[in-house]
Image 1: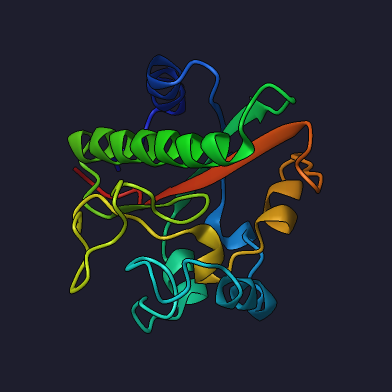
Image 2: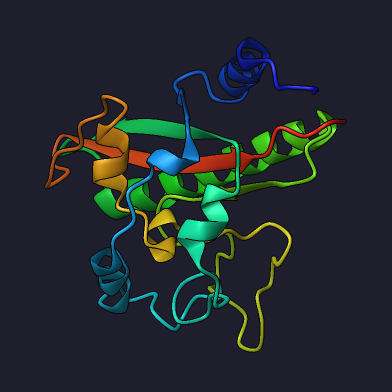
Amino acid sequence: MNTIDDNELMSFLKQNQKDAEGILIDPKDLVFEENVKMNCFYCGKYNNNWRCPPNLPDIDYQKMIGEFDRGLFVILKYDINENVDYSDIRSESSITLHKLLLSLEKWMWRHHRSTVISFIGGSCKLCKGGCGKERCNNAYMSRSPLEAAGVQVVKSVRKYGVKLSFPADKELTRIGLLLWQDEEG
């Protein structure tokens, strides 16, 4: 079986975003909770973003994610202080994480992984003017947030030693997830 070299993957991650942290995981360790999806209902992106609820496919996400062999939490941290606009950091950090995950997907495809997918932290913000009226403007590049799939991110990353604190008044942490199957290539 042609497995992914973990050191090579982590090196690629650091080459693309030197401050990124990567944590290899077993997708079966993720915590799924229905209450997490309810938070989406109260978000302003609900029914206004093609990659957020209720516009997601009707999939058993816990089952689907459990079909992947390996995963990588990708973590970015941003200092928050009085000299920084919080909304700008939220938007910029989402886009940075999103693009980093897309580059990791491409790396995986070049390493013979046809079944690779990523989930972003927060809603998709690729389109500066917002989502298209009839359909997604970036169907090949847009991704859904982990929470929209029912992943309880705080409890899931805690299993790997990452502690998140709320409110995010000193540091904003963005967490995305890359998933793949170890297949022959």
